Image 1 (tube, rainbow, N blue to C red):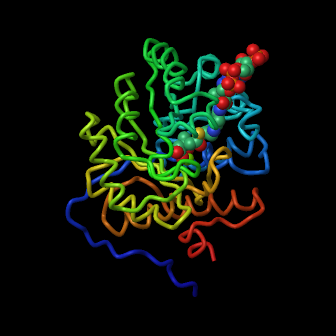
Image 2 (cartoon, helix red, strand yellow):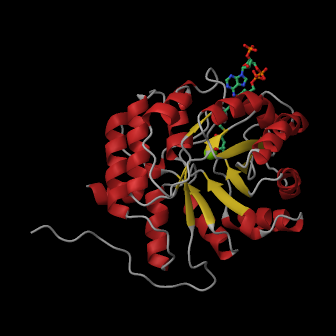
Amino acid sequence: MKSPRALPMTVLAAGLPEQVTIYEVGARDGLQNESAVLPTEVKAEFLHRLAGAGLRVLEATSFVHPKWVPQLADASDLLLRRLVRTEGVDYPVLVPNERGLDRALDAGVQHIAIFASATETFAKRNLNRTLDEQFTMFEPVVRRALAGGLRVRGYLSMCFGDPWEGPVPPDQVAAVARRLAEMGCHQLSLGDTIGTGTPGHVDAVLDACVAAGAPIRQLAVHFHDTYGQALSNTLAALRRGVTTVDASAGGLGGCPYAESATGNLATEDLVWMLDGLGVAHGVDLDTLVATSVWMAERLGRPSPSRVVRALAG
Ligand code: HMG
Ligand code: MG
């Protein structure tokens, strides 16, 4: 007889939110970094399975320049012809500029995410703009999106270190956060693009953003797991009252324009920890693991998620 699968024992810890929203980025942050370009119908099925696992926010794709990220060049086809939407699921997309917004509007998008850099070098490398010019690029995007009733999330990259510039002062991050909040972003996602942050550093960045006028409820965290710190950093953020956590099914992810960016915090690893802490999240772990195993087969390599590996064996 097969033994029942392992479960964490639920032991509540003080000072944590009762509920967390998982903002799933596997289909965007995950697939943008794969050398293989997956067929559009596989992406659509991935999203459908993620929704079936209970995830309610699925970043679906990206309306960036197709030459910059060929892996997601099929964004319009995916949204207009392939994706079968699940009721109650939000499907935000990345949009850098007005051309991207036009394409996203044509595809019926309701929720977009602009993505700013906290550093000069990464703004140039990722957006071909200076730090100031990125805001000039975003301004008409946000204005038109809000006027059209869309919601706009703002990402900040390189909040915890930059591979070219080294340490990034929290006040520099906070200044970018403030500008995005003033533009009208409903949520700010603080990205540890290269995964160098540690929990005390998370406190410092959150403190700086709050001091700059962004309330904690407006902040989300986006940790890449390059140095194995993503889960501890998430716990630090939850203790400070953050209730939206970005994660990627199976730990897929990275940024093609950031050296040493590897996968995001794996959604399964996050779910395991939240289950142990008794924090509600709405995800069925077994369905999610099965989805990541299915995706790993499509990609031809095993998932880096520890929980997927432990449960799929
Ligand atoms: P550019 O070369 O400066 O573009 O790129 P441009 O404004 O000079 O336009 C040049 C041509 O591209 C024009 O065509 C435009 O129409 C066209 P032409 O008139 O010459 O025929 N064009 C577009 N076509 C389709 N869709 C568009 C688009 N925009 C311009 N959206 C640009 C500037 C922002 C477009 C480029 O730098 C770009 O696409 N960058 C995106 C890079 C990217 O996607 N990186 C990964 C996502 S960010 C990330 O992963 C980090 C995150 O996860 C958080 C974290 O981990 O920290 C979010
Ligand atoms: Mg990322």
